[in-house]
Image (tube, rainbow, N blue to C red; front, side, top):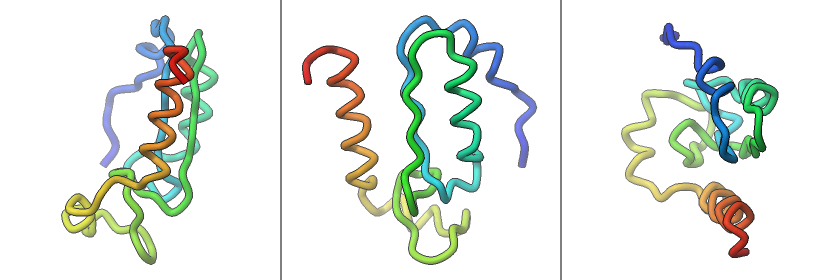
Amino acid sequence: MELAHDPREDLRRVAVPVPAVTGDEDLQVDPADLAVVAATVPGHATTVALPDVTHTLRRQPGSASSSAYRKERREPVNPEALATVVRWCREVTGLG
C-alpha cells in the first residue's frame, strides 16, 4: 500500500538534526528513501540502513515478510538499531 502523503515538503521545514534509521529489509519504506531524506532536510540528517533488519527494526530470518511482523514485535529491537539511536542522541546533545 502506498501512502498519498509526500513528506518532502515537511522535511524541507525541519530545522533540527534528523535521525533516519531503517533496515535494508524494510518492506514499508524503501531504504533508498534515506538518500531523499538526506538531500531534503536543510540541516543535518543522519541516515542508516541496517543489514537484515525490517521496518520494525528487528531481524527477520529468511526473506522479509510483512506477515511475520506480528511475531517479530515480540522480539527485542535489534541491538545495532538501539546503539545507532543512542550514538546519534549522544552526538547531537554533546553528551557522548
